[in-house]
Image 1 (cartoon, one colour):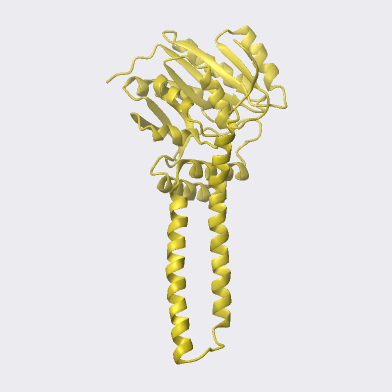
Image 2 (cartoon, rainbow, N blue to C red; image 1 turned 90 degrees about the vertical axis):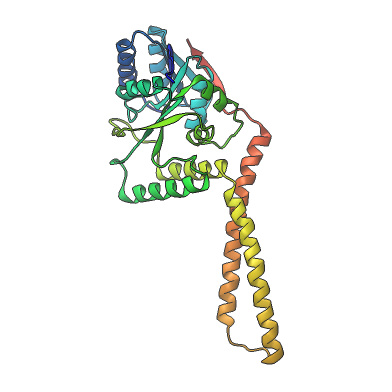
Length: 312
C-alpha cells in the first residue's frame, strides 16, 4: 500500500564538523529545492563540539527558517544526539543520517521513492567499506555475524544509520527507555514493513572520522548487550555444564582413590583445568557486569540528552 508523505525532517548530529558542515547543508538544501512539493526541515544537533560547528549552525539557522539548530550541553554520543533531533521532529517521515557527507544527501530521493511504495522503514546497506583497513573489515564482518545471531536478526549485517522512518516508528523509538542503545537495532525490533537499499558509503572528504576502533568496539558490544539477553542464557548453560563436568571428574577421582590410591601424576592437568575454570568464571562475571551496568543506567533514569539552546 503506497505511503503518503507531505513533510520530511532530516535529523542529524554534528561533532566537530566545521570542515564538512557547510557543504552538507548546501547539498541538503539542493534536495529541498528539487522537491518543492514537500515541506522540508533540516534538524542538526551540535553534540558538544569544541570547534566552530555551533557558530556555523547559528548562521545557517538564522538565514534559513527550514534549518533547526540544537546545541546539547555536552557530548551525549551519536545515538542520543539523533534522539534529540527526532524528539523535535513533527514530519510525516524522518531521515536519519550523518553530517560528515559519508551519507550522501543525493541518495535521499531513493529513500523517498521506496518509502512511498509502502515501506515505513528504509535503511542503507553497505557492501564495501574501502576507507577502513583489512583487519577492521574482518572484525566488522565478525561483529555483524555474531550480533545478528545473538539479537535474532535485529542487528542487520552492514546496515548503517542512514535510514528513513515513519512518524509511527519514530514515536515508538522515542518511547524506548534504553540508555545503552543502538537505534538501528531497536528500529528493526519493531518489525514494521522495511526494505534495505544497497548504497555505497562515501569517503570522508574533510576532518577525521569519530568512529575509531575503540569507539566501534564499544558501540558494537553495547548494541549486542542492550538488544539480547542470550549471553546471559549462555552463562547459565555454562554453569550447568561445569557442574556436570565437575561431578564426573569427582566420581573418577573417588574411583581412582578406592581402587588405585592417590596418584601424583596429572598435576599439570589439574592446574590447567583450574586456570581454565577461573578464566571461564571471569568471562561469565564480565558478561553479567555488562548487563548490570545497563540495568543501573535504566534505574537511574537520567536524561538521554540535555538541550542547552536551540534556534528555529
